[in-house]
Image (tube, rainbow, N blue to C red):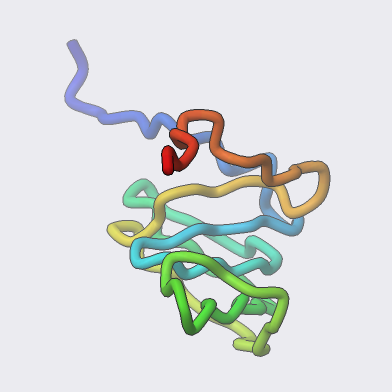
Length: 99
C-alpha cells in the first residue's frame, strides 16, 4: 500500500468551467472554477451568491449578490456540480403533512 492519498474527486474536468457549490449552512455559490487542492479548497472567479430566504435560512432565493474572486474552504463544501445541465428536483423522501 502506498503512502500517497488520492482524492475521490476529479475536479480537473471542471477547471475554467462554471460550477455550482453548496456550502454548510445553506449557502449556494456559482462561479468559474479556477483551482482546487486535495482538501477540496476551491478558488472561484466571477462568483455569485444566491441570497437566503428570510423565512427559512436553509433555502435560497433567486436574488443574488456578486462576490468576485473567492476561496471556498474545503471543510465547508458539501456539493460541487456543473452550473449548466443540472436541475433541482423536489425531495422524494419528504413525507406529506397529515392533518
